[in-house]
Image (cartoon, rainbow, N blue to C red; front, top):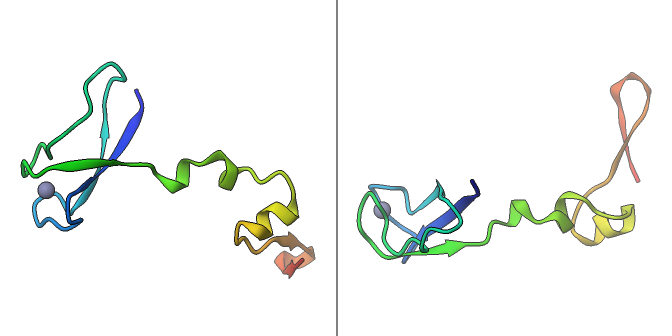
Length: 81
Ligand SMILES: [Zn+2]
C-alpha cells in the first residue's frame, strides 16, 4: 500500500500538525479532508521519494543536485571530492 503525504491548506494545523502521511489503497479516492481536523488537504509529492535524487547516475549529477560527495579514506576520515 503506498504512503501518501498530505498537507492541510495553509500548511498549519494544531490538530494534525499541518502535514501528515497516510497509507491508502491505490483504488481509494483521493483524500479531500484531513481525517483528524476535517480541513481541506492536498496531496504532496514527496521530494524524498524521487529516484533522481536517491540514485544519482554519477558524481557530477549528485553535485548538480546539491549533494556534497564524500569519499571514505582510512581511519574514518572523509575527503570532499
Ligand atoms: Zn489538521
